[in-house]
Image (cartoon, rainbow, N blue to C red; front, side):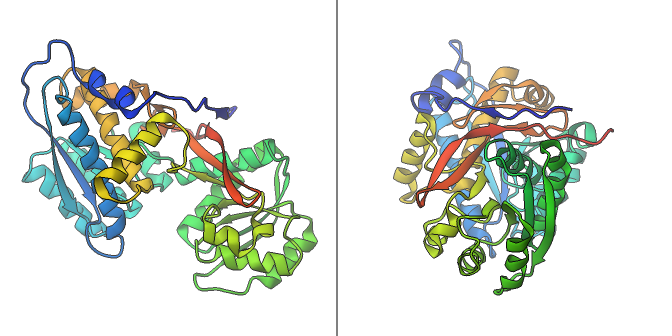
Length: 396
């Protein structure tokens, strides 16, 4: 199976209004309709509460814009929120409350993959549409659509999407064929490498060494010395934001800076990381679902509106929940009603123009959506474009 990667033209609409505004949601003969009940499950308390706050604010902003424009053929959206506390048990309880007490037909959630995985069978049993906007565990997709759960859709790239896009860009755009692995020893770090290995042979790439680090580890010199000596052109790093600067500084110490490039995901693009060792970070490649700096009119308009409304700039969680509400609104509009079965059927065939590019869904109800490729150039993140790649599923 051939996997195509496409550079997207980055001009969408002149503003958010033209992308997701009144014309999209109102018909010329809009009539009064019942309220559309939408639930959001997110961590509103606990260690991930900040992510939940951004998620809720993004969703609320989209709901306000849609309702202020007249709703969807006259129907207004009523948003209900429930706190998952970032744990599967509380996430399931929150989901049940939204379904049983609030009577929602549509749910967006959760930030945590473990919570979303626990929510899937609950939504399936209730035949409530679950739209995931922020979890990246590929298992959510593997067991959705033809994989089993017909009521789960995901409008977010998976760890597999990211690994595939980064590997292909590194091989085809940068010409790397020899790689070393230095990733965090966690489900995230190891699964990202597993998926990288799945696709790397397609690009004639090989891994020369494979190492993982524990959270809190601070000395990488022996591993980096091995990488220096084995001829690797790039280090595949899926790791912790606080650890990347340490690795970058030690690359500088051992003479790898400017000779071996970091690729993967570890907040390479932050000012703190780049300043830690500019020479080591130069050329680093990272993929992101969305960035406030993304240069499209609709994305810029969202950033401006969110910042004005909440007195802070949006992060990725704010954007993806805002965007997912607008995606659902478009599906309801195209379905001609808020009937759950009709909306689900429309989603499977939808072509939705997001601020980053066109979104469609595969047969596992996983969005085919662009990811933004960043490369550090002259000490600053440079957006190289928005890219997509098809997941290769095992035979059903």
